[in-house]
Amino acid sequence: MDPVADARTILVIEDQEQNLYLMKYLLEANGYEAILAREGHEGVAKARSCSPDLILLDIQLPTISGYDVAREIRRDGRLGKTPIIAVTSFAMPGDREDALAAGCSGYVEKPIDPECFIGQMEAYLQDKADDENGTSEASQGGAE
Image 1 (tube, one colour):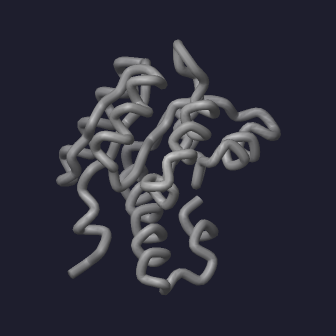
Image 2 (cartoon, rainbow, N blue to C red):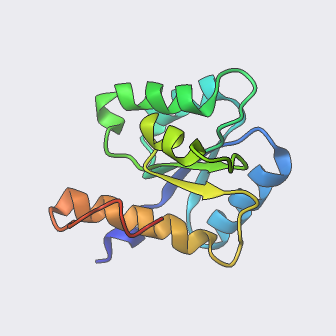
């Protein structure tokens, strides 16, 4: 059985309704369960309660930054290997590095490309599955 096909739950932490709707639509249309959080504290709580297979995280959130959300999620040992993908309009030099330093596994720029979005998410899920199975060579390199 394909390990990516077994990974079905994705937590989306995003405060902009249009972005939230688009990601939810694309995920559900491709067989994923999308769990939604509209601000950082809610996102951390839902990550802990549902243990998602992947987290899509906006960096500009209203109550705490996405960087702080990523750091808080990484403190929870059960979520240590869960891919966290920064999905952000931040595109200045150093923003990608800041997201990775905060604990994100990868970085996708907004606006997202609906044609490529699911493939990008599945690459991170495959990296996670490979890492868990001990078959990953340079796990985080190929999905970005």
